[in-house]
Amino acid sequence: MTPAQEVATRIPHDAQKAAQGPVAPPKPAVAPPSPPVGGATAEREEPKLRISNLKAWYGSTLALKDVALVVPPRSVMAAIGPSGCGKSTFLRCLNRMHELIPGARAEGTLLLDGEDLLSRQVDPVLLRRRVGMVFQRPNPFPTMSVRDNVAAGLKLNGVRGSHDEVVERTLRQAALWDEVKDRLDESALGLSGGQQQRLCIARALAVQPEVLLMDEPASALDPIATAKVEDLIHELKQHYTIVIVTHNMQQAARVSDQTAFFYMGELVEVGPTEKMFTNPDKAQTNDYVTGKFG
Amino acid sequence: MTSLRWRKFVDRFWTLASAAGVLAALVPLASLLWLVVSHGAAGLSWTFFTNLPAPVGETGGGVGNGIVGTLLLVAIASVIALPVGIGAGVFLAEKGNGRAGELIRFVTEVLSGVPSIVIGIVAYGLVVARMKHFSALAGGLALALLMIPTLARSTEEFVRLVPGALREASLALGVPKWKTSLLVILRTAAGGIITAVLLAVARAAGETAPLLFTALNNQYWNLRADQPTASLTVQIFNYAISPYEDWHNKAWTAALVLLLLVGVLNLLARILSRNRMEGAR
Image 1 (cartoon, each protein chain N blue to C red):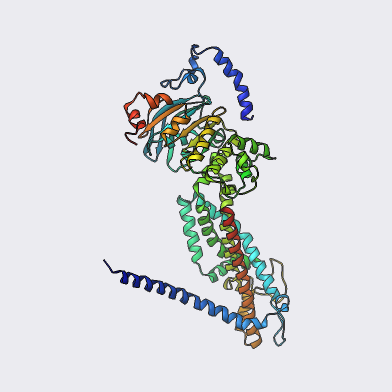
Image 2: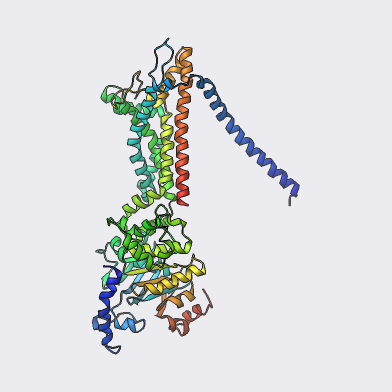
């Protein structure tokens, strides 16, 4: 199913829910065990991601302590905090890239549409096709053309046939099509850094994930390229659930619906972005977002 | 605080000293090339490349069977050594941090230190003693045993040079680890590995000792793996230890041909690796 079709099937579902009105109580089964977070959307819809008691280790070092939060579908969750606070570790737990580091492991409950991602039954390889990832530095495959880079996830996973349609659609989604449509067969390394990063986003989208993880996707880019990526995040959240790690608090404020503040491996506070930046509950959050430390 | 003049002097001194080192390294190389070319060039002719060796007393004749034999031996060696060497290298780079990796690395180091004549004896024991006769297969196996350790180590180096970000990019797309290793990592490292292969082939083509009692020699054309085979190096050896002036000259010319062969392989390696680098930039 293409994302567009997915959305099409979701819309009546949403409309139905909306028709119940914001006062309709959430179904008991949906009631979050952790403190409810997020705005009206979170209360109306089943969360895309429900995380509780998430702990992550590097060897014997506990890098993430009992994280619990909920991400509603088609929204952007930003994870902020100083270096080494665990926000990247948190992100890498969500597609089980964390466990690839020797000695690293994670524990807890990590529900994607109600399915526990950390259970032994879940194949991390298949999971990563549902939870895509964009990295800090653009990392296109150097031996492949622009076209092959976008189709890499399909080709490497043995999907045969022409991928031209997917390539065009995802490059359009990544707002890159007009810039590269005449150089699809050239090396991906000929693109600028910002274009390479959007290419990596298109590559992640081509596998048709449900959730997109972004690990400081704009930190290696100049301000113009950053603005393009941020616009793109706004576009993408209509179809995808996005979790973004960022060092840049203004960026978190600009792109996210909810913000989670991590410090020393703990989730200090999570809430609607506007509240987090204007009137957070915790003094620590206030100190961080106002630039007193970090 | 040392004076500027002193520092300039020290700088000049070491620049000259390192230039002298380069010169000292180049002199033997240049004189070797000169010696081989000056002695061997006279005997070069088309028939030298195409004809069989002439019997003692007859003029003319060539080392055509030796060239073909060397190519055959190197081909057999490559068929055996490439999968094993490259496979071991990929294993060492991807999974080689545990006990097994340590062991394999140690064994390849020991193997690369074994004198080539000893490798020849091993191939003799493994193949010749069982088949009861000398063969190209035995020679090829001996050369393969020489190629494997260098191939494994250089493949490991080149695979390790591939940025971890590419591995992560592939894994994050839901590509299984083995496919990531083969289709992404190995493909990215291919330029370096091709260079390593050609250098290993060039080195194998120049070996004599492991061929003496494996492939032996052959006065005639041979393309069969189970028959004794001529090779340029053994031909040179036989000509050089003979008492005939004509054969001595032929040894020089054959040495020149061998140098050309190895030189072309090295050049090819350079060109291929440079093209790869530019493609990747």
